Length: 199
Image 1 (spheres, one colour):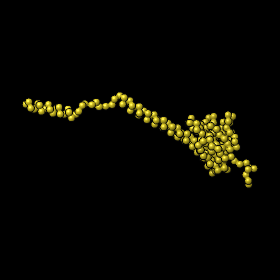
Image 2 (tube, one colour):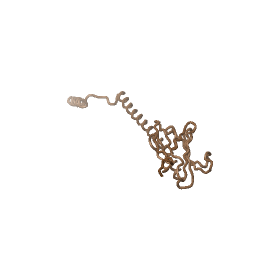
Image 3 (tube, one colour):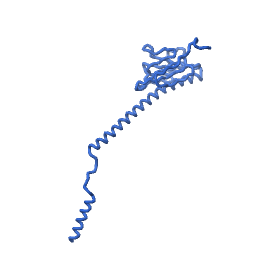
Image 4 (cartoon, one colour):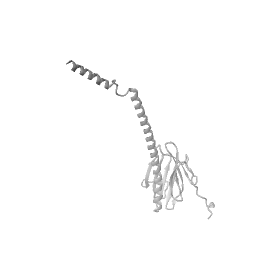
């Protein structure tokens, strides 16, 4: 009987030697705080990048919407004898595409409006410059681009500002009807006067 008890006692001692010293499992409060801080930094960076991308996409979508409206007006006018007008209102920060149906050009009828859109804070109209050097100013806050079967009445550029106030130009070429969005406040070619044309 004695030998049996001793044997059991030595087995318990040998098992405790193999387990080694008892260690605490888990994380300390400092380690948890560091992990939470790192994760929150990644979340903030991701949110900032997502907001920036969404704003950039909003600007591109609004600028392309205006380009598309102008291209649609030029295409529709080229395929028919109808006239169209894109009205840029700098005070309202909006544009309107309409089909001209009456000789009275200053009055816009409700039934003539094809599309009217407002710009957000991420896309603002800065100014408009026509290719005869007429520019929008404090007195002239509305610019009108008319197009008929033979093309645009005037060419020019519409300068937009993105959310970082970086300029982009929508260039309207009255000769080939092309409307393009370009980065920066770009120069555009002026039409030549009759005395400058050799033929």
